Length: 129
Image (cartoon, rainbow, N blue to C red; front, side, top):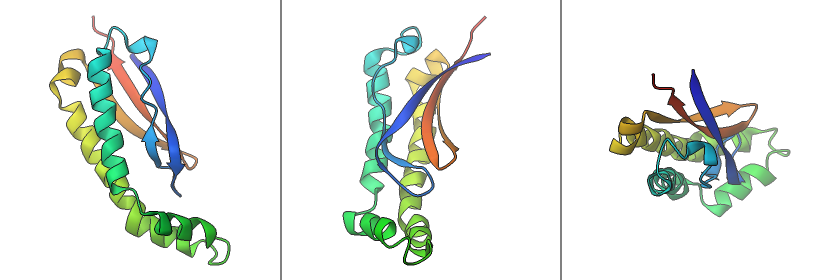
């Protein structure tokens, strides 16, 4: 069975559940999985990829403020056009992180998980026999 650590979303929230960044605090459960230095490099690359593709303030405000007046259309429009870039960047970076030497050597994988308009990153490691 895999052991899992959840890195909660922090920062701004996007309709659909993506956050502008995820918790970069090194968890004690990961002590035997990855070095703190490796973990910081990996989570930093994920957070940077999201932030670099995060929508500008006017787009973010438009989607949030206009939502009731457009019956959610503004949220859908901005989600499809803007937030999807950030999500794609996150998924591509997580894929690269999982292929990194640090993850391959330790058996650790990162995964972006969504549930009920929220998200988090799961860091897991299969127990070695």
